Structures are given as C-alpha cells and as structure tokens.
Image 1 (cartoon, rainbow, N blue to C red):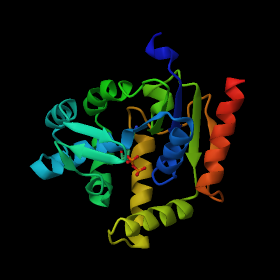
Image 2: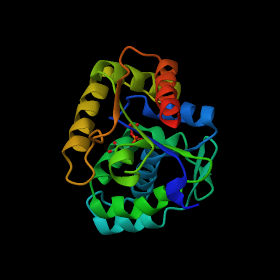
Image 3: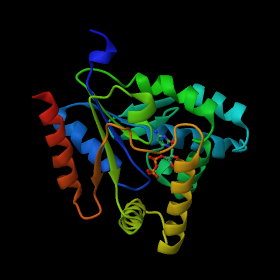
Length: 222
Ligand code: CDP
C-alpha cells in the first residue's frame, strides 16, 4: 500500500468559515486523523513574533518553518513542549500567519510536514490549499463558504470563548483584509478546486454541515 491509497478529505475555505469545526467533527466520526494546516502557519507566526523576526525576512521565516518543533497531541498543539493551543488563536498571530502564508519558501517548507499527516485509516485536512496543492488527489474536496456577517459572528464568538477581547468593527475589517490576501497571493491562492463540492454554511449549523460532508463521502464510497 502506498500513501496515495490512504483516503483524504480536503476541506478548504476562507477565514472563519467554520472549516476547523466541521473538519474536526468529520474526522472524529470517521475515526480519521486531522490536519489543521492553518495551525502550522500560526506556529511559524507565533515563533517569529516571539523572536522578533521581521515578517519580511523570508529566509529566516522559511528556516523557522523547516525546523518547527511542534507536536499535535489530540486537541493540544505543543511548540517545543509548551502548550500554545490558545496563544495560536490570537488575532495578532492569525494576521501574522496570513502574511507569512504568502511567502513561497515558507509554504514549501511546510508542505512536506503536511504530507506526513496522511496516515491510515485516513485524513481530514483543512486549510486554503488542501484540495488544490497539498492533496490534489483527495477523495473528496469541499469548499466551505459563509457570508462575511456570519463569519464575523463566528470569529467573535470563538475569540470571546477563548478569553480574548474582540470588537465587531475591527473583526470585519480584519476579515476583509485576510480574504483579500488569501485570494490575491501569487502562490496557492484561496480558490475552490475544480472538482470541489461547494457548501455555503451561512444558514447551517455545524452539525448540518458535518452531515452534508459525511453524506458526500459515503456516496463516493458506494
Ligand atoms: O482561523 P482562520 O481560518 O483565519 O485561519 P487558519 O486556518 O488558522 O490559518 C491562518 C492563516 O494561514 C490564514 O489566514 C491563511 O492565510 C494561512 N493558511 C494558508 O495560507 N494555507 C493553509 N493551508 C492554511 C492557512
């Protein structure tokens, strides 16, 4: 058996579209592994911020990405032994991650690491380029969207729940800037794969979205 025989479900979409929640629940239901690829960009960002590495120093950032001492332990994400799961969710880190993600050598350095998550019995991977660049042969590709208003609401709730302060005005501005960066960058821009199923979750609960993804996957397996 080669790694290309191991099933992959790729779930891509813009910031705060609910990909993470949906992908995690789909993985749990199927007993599959889960890759939060955004967390890798956030880990590079957090390391860079802590070391005062300028976000314009592509070589230094690619070097950080290539040597990232990270461990994924269930829901916990460790950076050299330290649990950084909460620190990674800060808006400052997300913003830096979105800038760093435009750098081709950083993306290249993280690509190998992402491929290693493809293990039996299968993988659910979420991000921006799971179906287009990292796992172009994924068995199922889903592109999750939601209106800007719905996404801002979700991000607001998520931040407050994690104990961060948040304000709607800044969040909306932030969301628009991040969308623009993700869509317009030269490498791996955010776009649905040609063979992706589109799912607008603006008026859906997370459970309904999970159900839809599971149905698509079950239909493919028939
Ligand atoms: O929570 P949110 O969806 O905003 O972000 P995330 O999925 O944690 O990813 C953080 C940043 O990394 C995003 O703003 C993207 O620019 C970038 N990213 C990427 O370029 N490619 C991926 N596969 C995943 C994330």
